[in-house]
Image 1 (tube, rainbow, N blue to C red):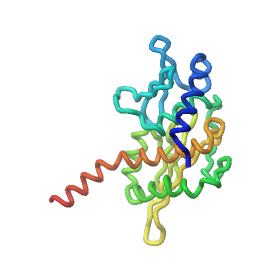
Image 2 (cartoon, rainbow, N blue to C red; image 1 turned 180 degrees about the horizontal axis):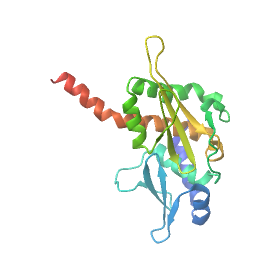
Image 3 (tube, rainbow, N blue to C red; image 1 turned 90 degrees about the vertical axis):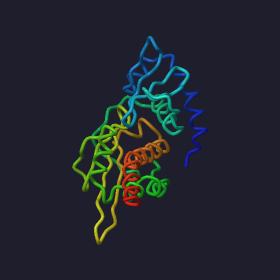
Image 4 (spheres, helix red, strand yellow; image 1 turned 90 degrees about the horizontal axis):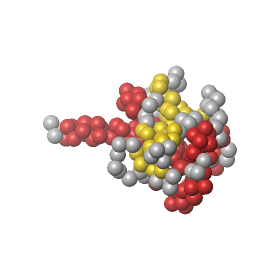
Length: 215
């Protein structure tokens, strides 16, 4: 859906024009700024990231390269966040501006994998959401509010499958989300949330599979 290489280059260029006014960026985004070390510190999906004035992004305490999608989203948010706080009202992807154009791939790339991974593993879902800083929400059979970015929470919900119905999942966006990121960027954010939740349980699932094959 999105050419991330082009999106990343554009985000780096846009960020370079804003980095000379860190106080304004802090006020809009909820990031902090270390004036001595000259970098922003931003929480994103359960981890803190350091962003220097050249647009380089590094996960705090890690030497691993930050993936393109994560780096792009972080820079886009720092560039475009409106400063508005969450409104406490949830929108489906379909309700976002022009969301209908990309709703089907959002199901394919985010919602269907979540349902498959967690539809019969609600406790794994709860553990995975806590890992990303989530708080329980009274939605579906299991739900959580995830602080994806300081002013941009997401809600994720699982309905367990049974003999009549397959499991279902949904990701909801606070109504303020379109003032912080474009719908294209919110699409990527939702997909990244799904992938990170699923990745959290993969080692445990692989270990169980290995034990099943090697009793």
